[in-house]
Image (cartoon, rainbow over all chains, first blue to last red; front, side, top):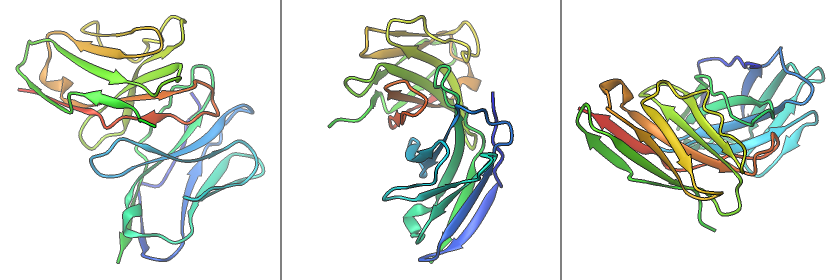
Length: 110
Length: 114
């Protein structure tokens, strides 16, 4: 399975932008890059996904490197509610099961 | 519309007992997944159902674990002869099954084996 590498943790200040990096150097051409987050005591929730082009939605933006070996999740203005574990995952499509690593724990300071 | 639901939300059982966990996926979703999350850890894939295809059971940790799905609806995960190491949150997700599709997760069942 293609794997991803993320830092263990990151801190941010409220109302400031946050850039969460992810490396996936063994990504194959048909792998989608998905981001999920998990708030304390809740199941994971979808954030965003992309294949080659940068993507924007109401929650975040996803910047994908031209060679697709890395990507960055961008939260434009962090809120306290954004404190969570963020998982960067490659969906290989063979059976669409998601392989979750440990993710990156984002802390947001008031 | 309704999301993925799971029951019970909490289950406490004694070592050696059997337990059944239930998942109701989003209507119309052909794919259903079970994951396990131990305290402080990431999610571990357990099993995947897609339509009428044979399930992918590659993540089941032992033959004490089994799961069934009725058509494209409810699924039950059964753990026989529970052990303390089975204590975890069991999460269910559903989707349309393609690599571009979002998986929608339920709230999980917290299983505690005494």
